[in-house]
Length: 240
Image 1 (cartoon, rainbow, N blue to C red):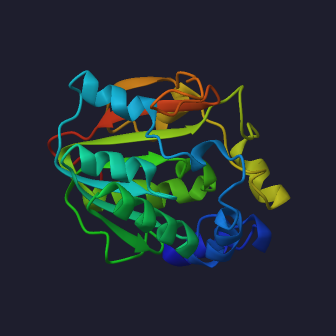
Image 2 (cartoon, rainbow, N blue to C red; image 1 turned 30 degrees about the horizontal axis):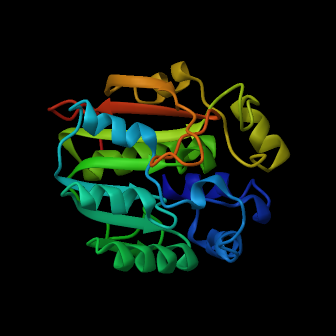
């Protein structure tokens, strides 16, 4: 399986790679200028994540933040009492996250590497949180994503994610077109039904468009993302 996935990876131009350990240099360049007007460079947590706790849909436990970037959601989870592991391909992003965590007095264990292969990401986690990782994966790497959840997400645990929303941001080409052109056009857009299909072994709690937030709001929200919350069944259902 790893050989097949690696072969499919190589169908993409090297500059299209955003998902393997070789992509760390690209992401380092992306994070090199912290003053860039990138929406998610802010220190605020996602409004959807905050909302889940306000409504009692989640409770503290162990959490894994996939593609954590500068750590804004990981730091928020730590403030709620979570034991948090946060992983990102980019050393620059991890260093920035560690600085922010120290400033906030938050206890977050940051790891630099590929979440799908690193042994430092060890479950079981009660929550896997993904703010912008899934939409940078090519279609065949959804298998790797689901396998990661099989390994690290506790039975009855939750997956919460945000990704590009179809009709708002990201590419909506058929999956096979990405392999013909050898690139992902910056990321894949997902409809609610596509997310339901990918995570069909999970119980849907909520799938909705993120709520846009004003610049002075204490939380982050942009209308070009869709937010989803799923619960893994209490008993495993996928073969490993």
